[in-house]
Image 1: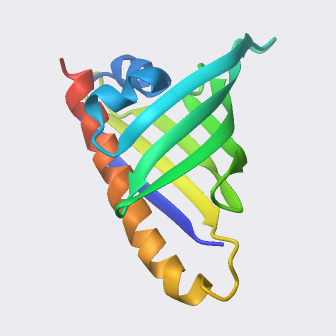
Image 2: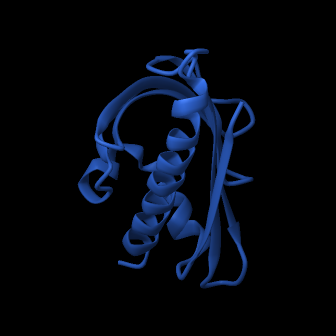
Length: 150
């Protein structure tokens, strides 16, 4: 299964970046590739984190990709684990991680593990999908950085 991991150093505090990462419903307003997001069934966990279901619609290489994911947000570790529960791909899962490097510099990482699910087309589609997901993920992280410094 392909795994795409992108990481960016953002000139903003970890608290500011984490706040933007968790505000998933605002993504369409400042991320060009995100068409829509809808968070529902958000519940508090005993460990201080939260769980939620989120519907996503993104533009990937000219096509619209849709899925619903289950998210577990660990606010102490500033990490979101997500797993697709339904959608266009057979598997779509990964994490967001926010780590303070200094008071004003933060490293944010987005990892995406996916499986297209069409064995016959896998050799053709997988390399294209890896590049497209890598580009989209980088664009999303850079947009977060711009938003976090405002």
